[in-house]
Image 1 (cartoon, helix red, strand yellow):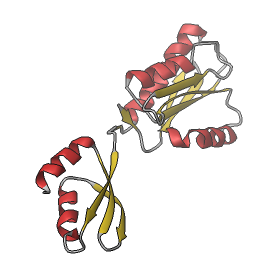
Image 2 (cartoon, rainbow, N blue to C red):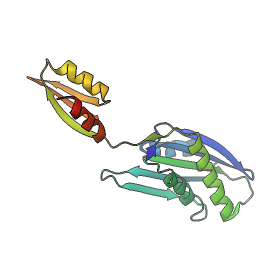
Image 3 (cartoon, rainbow, N blue to C red):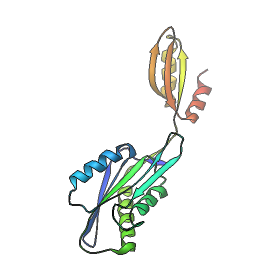
Image 4 (cartoon, one colour):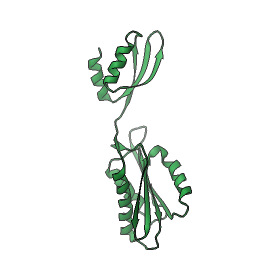
Length: 184
């Protein structure tokens, strides 16, 4: 699975219609959709698709045609995201109608091509499931532990200093296995 952390956009033109696709992190989806509708007042359609991973590690996906013939825009957009195994990612394609009807096949191709183009321009990151762990260490042992955490790429989320030091750390399960073998 993969995801984007930045927003990307691409313009595609078909028979005088303009298709502007925006690929973005899912967490920004609703706000960006509202912003784009305010910026593109003369646009005819705002087609969307998104996929995200919920708290149960299930993929939730949805799409909308926004007035285009059913199944000609949202579903093809979603199919592109699904084919890339994208998660926590949304796409919004704005269409300015150029006066020439594309037909259902032409719409499917135009929206698919627009989403493929923006995905080609985007930088995707591989998804890694992260786990959090709590580590206790003496004040004296803290520098050595921090060094080992850095070597293994384990991120420290929080430090609490008491009689001992309590660290909340985050990494993949594989990183924790490698870390456990080296730090004993």
